[in-house]
Image 1 (tube, helix red, strand yellow):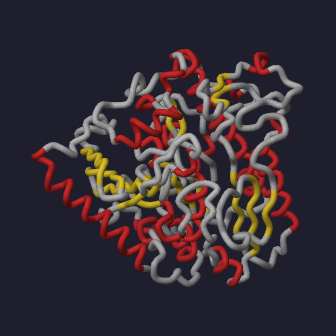
Image 2 (cartoon, helix red, strand yellow):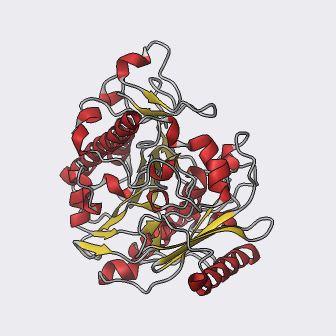
Length: 444
């Protein structure tokens, strides 16, 4: 699992500049979902939803550092109840009344670089740093890791996972999660990965200069206030993007090391392997940096399954699916009982059949509370995608700030059709889907 990873960072998703041979090989041996949608474009809500197979509106976790009563009884308990040894190493960052895994370890960030600063013993000018110049949060968007790659938390998470696999009870089946902080900020790949992507290969995004006209006010007046890419020069944006894709190349190398060691020990013969991220991010797209929007670079994430005995090989699924299907799907593939009512359904049948599933609405949910005190917007924001159509809105104090896009005709989501009379039927249909969705979550 990674954090804040876009699909265009992987060769198997069509990226012309990606250096991801290990993940691409995994994809070639399994099934790739090209339009997998996160339950929330924020870390803790998304990660919590994955563990419970529920939306933020069901778990109550809408934002990072939430003070709400934490949910309990994640679906990981079903694996533990079935005799599995469970462990998670690296970034945890979820909300649950009890630990989701039997063993949890590792660190999110190294002592060398934090989210906003290198350790004081380093002169940042020596490491090619690009920092966000805004007043709110001075994220590190580019730079080089100032120590050996073995001192990154990603390398250490793989080491911890491999060590746990060696020490575990071999009579018990296992569930291992290796969770990388990267390519989340600070984006500081170790050498040579900070320069592995040729500078000339990196293009600026389609919509970079400014947010499109007609975007919702919560984006224009709130998110843009703290996350505008206009504060960065084109050269800084190019470097930010180069380091981001270089960081993914480094993660691919570490992921390959994990798989190679497992294969050497015969641990892949009867093991389901999944690769995914919690959400994506902006890299200058739509005049923005960071996450917390419903644009495709943020809500679409890598979602890849490999399990030769049952999962179709070399298949790409275009139909949108939700990533909180993860644990229900793993439970079914492992032959364990399905979760109860209110949880997302398994997509194991799609994986085994290897064909396009029935088109169903997919949802993502968000509040901007994670940006307080810099942003005071408190409304619940919800997105639905149904086939070619995508709509988002703010629910509070009543439905407003509607954005509607036809992704076939407008894949970059530039023209908001919410006020187009010819699209009124689609607008009302999708608003009704969101209202029904939220009502079902609250009553459940």
